Figure 1 (cartoon, rainbow, N blue to C red):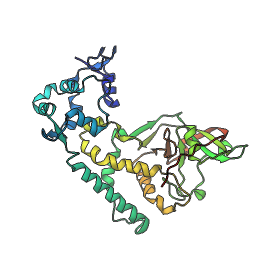
Figure 2: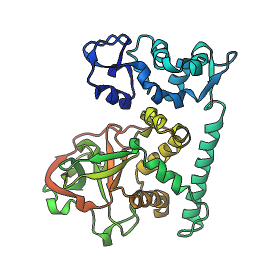
Figure 3: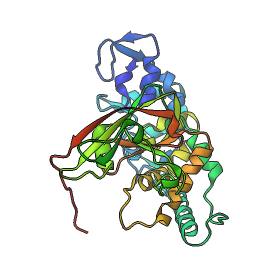
Figure 4: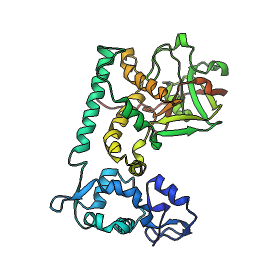
Length: 348
């Protein structure tokens, strides 16, 4: 029996199956004329994940329920009719090692608290670091985060994105109906660069959005404003650190025998992403940006050309902080008038 690309939510697994030359019908999700694969050939991608579980017959849950709970449906696709049968086929050559997990209820190390405690410790160190860099020491910091480990984490494939030459992003600036000239749409000169979430004062980065609507939100455009939107084209390939959704594919981490790092550090990486994407408020102080400025400079120091993070103002888009603005050229501007706004709100 064969599985196929449609059997898995993991894009990593789907790409591996798709790269194989075999075509046919899938017995697990009933897809027709698709790229197919022998399930037992996938065991190396699952071994480190299955090793996270142990039998706990009296208080555990089924292995499939545990996988779906712990990894938020990022492994098996909902199209699979019987996920247990597929998992049985995957472990066919390792039945002696894993059959007990499939035949009994299980408990995971996550829920025993091992990785939760480690994650809490890392968050605590980050909070100590933030307090010190803002309020105690600026340059010689004692409560440092583990930069060596963070460097190793950021080298994982799921964080790295290559943006190809010719890719277009957008930057918006509030203007009048005459707009702003193309040559004036770039990042501010260094002597006018105020501190932002990613850049320190006096160091100018280029902030872009992946679509026009997101760029309008990021410019804080409001009703009846005129906004000039610049189209910025990439002049060469660049390597970007993607902080948006690194948690989506645990299979990559499992294959690299780094599943413990996935469980320990992904919650922390999500915290960093949220802090980097927080909108700048009028009452914010410059020192509030110091932790994420430090983080961005570290990302730059390990060879990345920029960092990509989710927009907190538009859930459908994301932002890009480019460390070397010369990598982009503004090739066109358009002028927009804001005709309506939707003020979503919540009571504090």
